Length: 276
Image 1 (cartoon, rainbow, N blue to C red):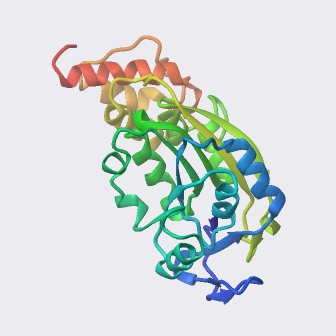
Image 2 (cartoon, rainbow, N blue to C red):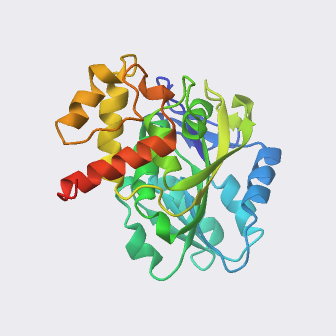
């Protein structure tokens, strides 16, 4: 499992295990056996699971998963790491897809299976990847990801706090999100400059009829989050024929609960269809 830091990457260097941590990928490799064990226990792999690991790196988590089940798939953009993993485990136990995960065809890959997706999500792609996966949540059993701690805080946040915003509201529309445990920088080689955390995401029935309508609504609402709703969001909604008395003019976006956002997004989606 690879960890990627948001700070400016250091030059490529050899880890203690002799693996090259590449500058352009910002690679930090998980080496703490206790953390690896805790992640595998949280996943609880079963023999019939279709597990897909994103960004296996040199394979610390891969090895631990394959000690519990007979086969997994993995997506790795680094061709050298992909080749080393394939050579170590063989194609019968590890199906390695050398690809950019942002362009991965999840539905075509899954077929009639439902997937359990695990791994570390690099800082620079974590948000678009998480939002992209939300579009295929119906073919997913669950997701276990290591992310920057601050990103996990945003995903699980509720109304009123500084972390509450667009990302969490969007993802909570499709998932139950559980912050499992924190992972310190020294669990990686080389250590990143940020703390990490492990997140479980379990798909649930969609709480909103249109994710695109919700995304558009939240972009407007949180684009000027310090302003009261009367100054930007309410006029924008009126232009679309939407009045909502529960959106108090003097409140700010971060004070509005998720269910209200989902209800207003549904009205926005209906207005696009000429229902309102």
